Length: 110
Image (cartoon, rainbow, N blue to C red; front, side):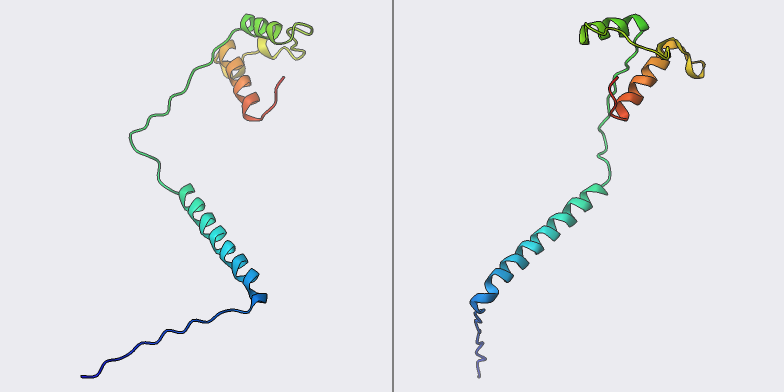
């Protein structure tokens, strides 16, 4: 019987290429992390979890009290009288809730 002997060769890189291999290794890790993060973005939603939302319905009086508490100098300021409007025939409280949600969504604080 004959035995096959395997030889392994170890090659050492010149010292001038050592930083390059470290950078290449770091780049591979960064690409792997990016791929893992992007794959998680397209993962299906978890089944069985129910999102809870809180209904925020306030009247103009609530807005005036909140404004006075938040800024006692200016107090309530609504130059366009938006709090008195009735958008889409849903009532004043729905209009105020829609305006507040829109304000939060767009990152503007009045």
